[in-house]
Amino acid sequence: MPTSVNLTKEYCSYPSGILIIDGKYVKVKGYKQKIPWLYAIDYETHDILFGILVPAEDEQSFLKLFQTLKTLNYPLKIVVADDRSSLPLALKKVYPDIPIQLCQNHYLENIRQVLHTRTDFTHHHFFNSLKKHIFDEYEDDDKLNTALHNVLIERTENIQLRQRIVMDISKRRKELFAYKDIPNCPSNTNLIELFNSHFNARLRSLKGFKTKEHANLILNAMLIRRRTKEFTDCSLKFRYLNGKCSLQMSIKKQASWPEILGVKAPKR
Image (tube, rainbow, N blue to C red; front, side, top):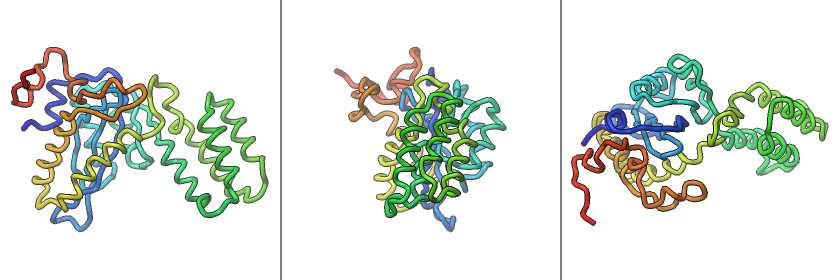
């Protein structure tokens, strides 16, 4: 079986350059805690370029991921990911001019937790105003400044807590609204979260891996299985993917599908 990274390097092409990054933690014998398996998905084709098993979600691990990506000649335009301080540091070393889009869903969830909105109704109006007037209706920096000011002064109770939240949004505006400058770019990591749920089902049955080599072998097989499995539940603008697999969408025209995997095409 080929490795997923070699498959991508030799046979695949991606026009969009919109990359979503996330990971799953897996149990490997010899490690006290579960370690991350990071992987990257091209947004437009839904194809998983590759995955790497690393000791931790630190700068060195993300550096390895971006260095691997560099060897694939992927036309990177933007990275969409959860908020990890080590990721932008690594990205800047390999792709200094590429922006990051933080997942707005996870960012808003963090605000919910700070405000305890699920158990305390004190900040419900403030949070809903943030979501509607800041995130849903964002247009440009000037209007953002006005909207942040208006949301902050709507009510005066707990003003210091709200100020901290508003100031953080203002400070991180480039990361929170970078998607606006890239056509068809999502503001969240919902796509890769769906893939995570598929992998969860398979990983639960495995319970763990005996060695890192064994883990890499099985995880690579899982990736290729996912890349060659037809989509059935894509909706809205991605409905056209149903009945196709992601490798079909990313494969170069001159490559012979599915013979590149060492199997013969089925007769129809």
